[in-house]
Amino acid sequence: MRGQSTQKVRREIGDGKLGVVVDGKLVTILRSEVNEYLDDWFWSAFSLWYRYKLFGALPFSGGWAELPAFIIEIIETAEAAYRNGYGNSTH
Image (cartoon, rainbow, N blue to C red; front, side, top):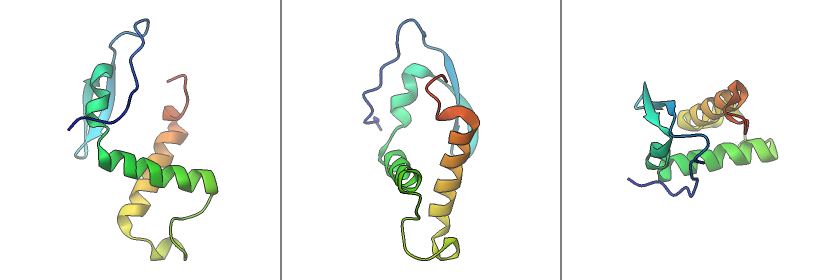
């Protein structure tokens, strides 16, 4: 599947390697291959986390215990990546 990102790798950075998690396993890909991993599921998960971050609220009324487990996993995973520096523009 082709991703929907229009992100381009700047030539001065080069085509370096990145560690990504695919099906629960850490694999190394080239920066030029990132768009291939940005499918519809990624963008829907990102959108859910971004709204959580932007508005500071859960996607449904109620608390954490009332959310489906996959939504909690999405928020926790994205938040951990963001807090570990993947949300910075310097990485």
